[in-house]
Image 1 (cartoon, rainbow, N blue to C red):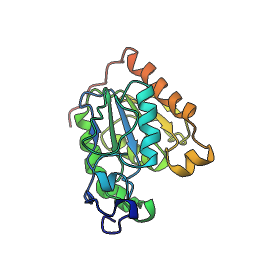
Image 2: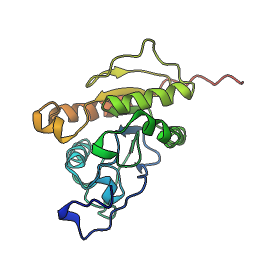
Image 3: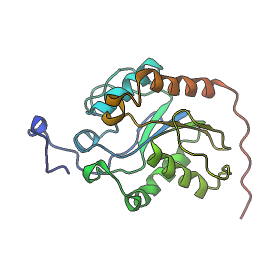
Length: 211
């Protein structure tokens, strides 16, 4: 994917490796996306950086007070996230931007480790059904008591769990934003809700039973 450069970026050296998560290590909000875009994060080396999906996402995070800039163009552009952390279900750019379940499962250890380390997180926003499924599996395998049957993914669907409240959100892909399936007010509503939830008193987490 890094060898097939877009003409506008032909003189740039693409990142072309697994893309790490990005944000505040003490975040209360975790955002889980799909995968690095071929000419976005795969090029710049930072999640949702250098493409229109990222422009849409970071503008909303800026309006909600999570980001100090409304856009992100490179790893050294000065963007800082406060109380938010962004990651993805798949870490390498998949062909045709369509990751497979096998790719998702191979990347799961990264997501598992981030969820374990980000112990202040109380709200998790899943950007799209694919991210929602990856997140659900990660929480389930970590021993989180999840509702059964699994609630169907949807925009602004809210699912309280002992680990964190999950909020569903349509992915800010061009397909969704250009067609109006996801608008600025719809995305803003997600992060305003996240703000409200993270400011509320947190219930105590149940202790893990010894094995």
